[in-house]
Image 1 (cartoon, rainbow, N blue to C red):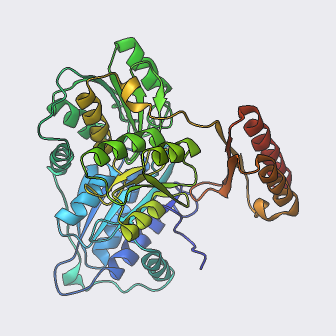
Image 2: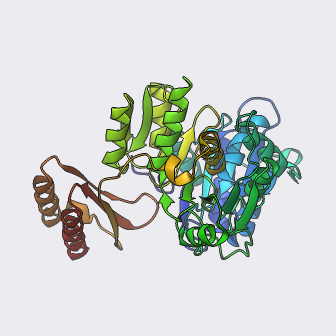
Image 3: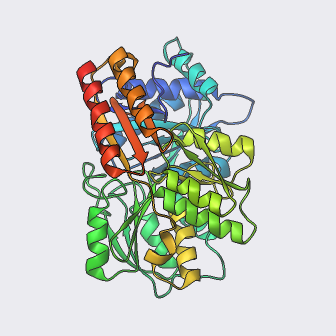
Length: 445
């Protein structure tokens, strides 16, 4: 069943346009609140946000919606998405809400919903909420309207939680770390956690002004981090995205280390101490074939899913894995959380570097990736991948690779682009095939 409002990661779009308006946010609050009004207890929702200017507007609208149907609201202010998932559980809330468009530019925003267990909502729950949004939602009687309050110690609670995932016998003393918070949700908590564990920190991307989130900083723009690491003579650089559920690392030489290498590092570390569940890890179709070959050489498996952390998490839960993620840096460690957590994943990486007593460049570059290229083609509407010309071009490319590489062509679930990825043993061939498919898609839009 096609959904009208929810995409692959909540509701997302340009603010004050389409679905991302104050009026829609209020309806979402009313609908989600109504859906979770079950039982006789006093119902509660936890609402967090990143640092986008539109967060004020959407937060106020959501508060109005939830309280109008009788839910009490707890507001945390700017906090990472995984912090809201954690607080939803620990505060015994009925629902958690994160206002964020993750790695998107500031003009976009989104609404992510978590159930009382801290997990993102199922497709069925989202469909039920969509149906309520488009219907008549009953309001609470005057004496049952909800109340709203802010929690002043929410950041401290998350810092304490994140630090608890770091090995008790280790400290970060002597490590010089550049931490890039993308001018986003973790701009206070991530530097504080690293400093409390003993690191000498150099923070960047920690001066949000409402419009500079992800602008030239963060995990989607690691160039600034790399330059800072080299200039400062740091041991390692950590980059989070706007809502801090994504992690990219830079070694002491300024080389970027993606999610595939990071997952390989964590899986090996956990396997060594008997902590790795499932005999391997879960990743998406976008992860490099080099990761799969590297894991196989260690006797570990790789299970692939469709793109999206919710698909990774679903497979982890149903098949008993505790490490999974995406090449882009979403890393889920289910021993510690219900969603991707950039800071917690970073602490596992830092622990492994500290234990090894070797440079990050030696510890974290686990395998040589196959040449891989990803390009995006923006489109205004329609289904360009369904045209005969595009299908024929893709089929020809697959035949040329002849089992020596992979193609992944898909429509993004978060923005109007077609993503074209190819990998293989010949970099020139990979680039040629990607360009050929992109040209065909452009001709079809």
